[in-house]
Amino acid sequence: MSRRVFDESFRKMAIELSYSRGSVKEVADELGISQTLLSKWRQRESESFQGATELTEDQKLIKKLQKELKDAQMERDILKKAVGIFS
Image 1: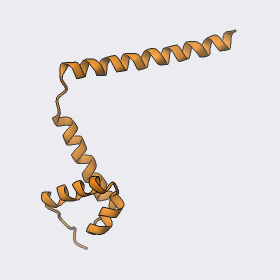
Image 2 (image 1 turned 90 degrees about the horizontal axis):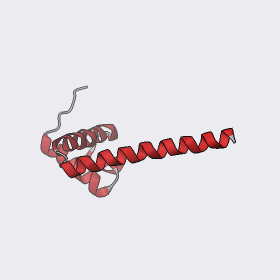
Image 3 (image 1 turned 60 degrees about the vertical axis):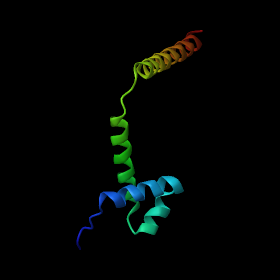
């Protein structure tokens, strides 16, 4: 059994089609490829896209503040539980 090789234009077309239809299974069945393969292509594309975008200073600050808020909320919840246990 030989391994099929798909060119970059086919991959991009399949990825775009899967996003537009919203169903990996449907597109994979239609194109005659496995769902797993199409999902891996989508994952690789999203990873390369995320790595290519550089965050601005404002976006970095927002991410930092969101992390701090999440940590503070977690600490607050822990303290609420501790007060409930000890009282």
